[in-house]
Image 1 (cartoon, one colour):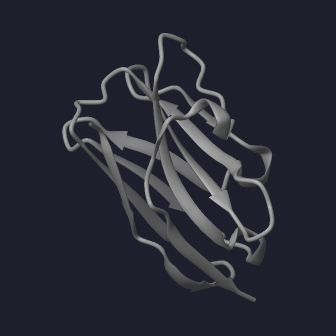
Image 2 (cartoon, one colour; image 1 turned 90 degrees about the vertical axis):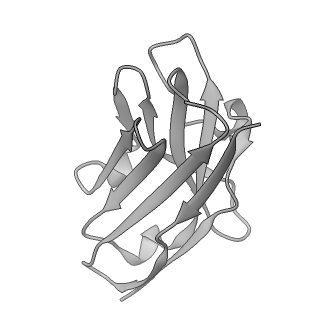
Length: 126
């Protein structure tokens, strides 16, 4: 059973940076889509970025392009999200997610992911 555990959330001022980590245990996760999602109370979970673990191909939603970077270290079974130039709108609970896939494209749609972490809170003050 694969388990995902996020860390790295916290409070930062607008313009600052945070790096989130997601440690995966129970699998080598070499053929997965892995992704970061975020959610604020009362709203649907929103995709942020995805990465195909075998190829490294990434997908970003428009609101975080050129500010966030998703990456993975397969040797450490760890997924990262480097978040720079943070804005108050980026404040949310951030979740790591994964799914097995044979596709080269990893879509940032929550419904397709069956493995989830517990979330880590990001707060951005203006």
